[in-house]
Image (cartoon, rainbow, N blue to C red):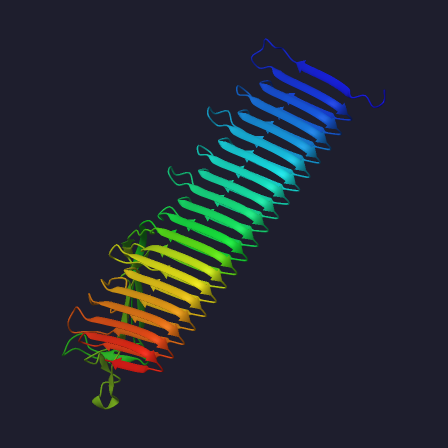
Length: 585
């Protein structure tokens, strides 16, 4: 009879007729199962079912008040452990574990306000799975499902207030890890890991403003993929899909109250790919500043002067007077823009780095200062002309802060890499008086391709396509905060060992444009184009450059600097061992 299954049934209720009753139901089938339920203050409900051997369940609930704490724990197998702590009412918890050695901890702290619910559901199937969920202050929802061996998931949500934190983690496989931390409300997070050794870390900090939500979705299929997501301020959207082995994705997005939206999408299929995305959208409200005025006048020695032309000479000491005054001024508000980034990597060992900063600022500040020597002397060293004249030194300055608010530009970046060991770096930032955007598209197919694109102040368009191996393309474009200029660059390379460099700087005072196109087909081609516009007497200067090379061993250099007229250059080479150099000013 020693091997017979021991079944124990316990159902305890207190004052069923009372509206503030505590209810507890415990069912155990097996050997050496332990269940402890502690409830205080009424309106607590608890159910525990354990089937197997040496399972343990601990449930503590109190301070439900006029609301309800509800706890359900179901365990099948051996050596499973469950701990549920709930207080404050409006908490619901469900834990289901099947297998060996699963462990789940759920801690919830609710409120007495209607609609402020903490919901936690944890289901684990397999062995050595662990799940820990901590939720506070209501309106938090968490669902964790783990199937496999040795998976670990922890979820912490805090200070949702009137907003909602929602987290769902699903892991199928073994030794996957998922960490989620959400604060400030209006956060949504979903993590799915299928395979072995995948790791997903998501940290989101929201705000209490309606409509500002952080959304994060991470899907991992394969083994030892890693995804790290950090989002603050709300209005951030992130999606990461990893298929393969050893892929790495890093996403950091930040938006403040005057910032707009950050959107990041990362797709990796292959092995050993790396994608890093950093996006910032920031602004500032209007605030008070001050204009500083400073004036001083000096003489190094005593001097004489008269109150009237016929009056007596009066001796004065050395002069060293200074004064500072402040005048209030309102500093204008400025706003961040919209950042959108999409990175697709297919292959092995590809690297993509995208950094987009859409942050406004202020302009208009100035400092005016200088020395103003006196035209007439203030007096003489003595009553006789032989003593010489004394000229005091007058110095003054006026300092005005940047008071004109300028909004940030919108940034759009697309990176597609197919092959092996491709590298792409895209940096976009700036602010503009006129609404504008930076647009970047980089496509690389082959291996060991390199592309770098940096754009500032909007109205820049860049497209780079490289097909082959060991291609290099660098595009740098810049204009001014107050300009209406347009920089456009397109680089297309097909072949091997091609190199293309494009540098364009637009005049901040004109309405012209820099345009550059470089297309290379063949081997060992090199094309370098640099364009800039200077201070021009007439508006509308334009630099245009196009280089097309087909063959092997071609070399072309084009440099244009427009002082007052339009520069246009076209270079086309077909064949091999061609060389072309064009310089225009």
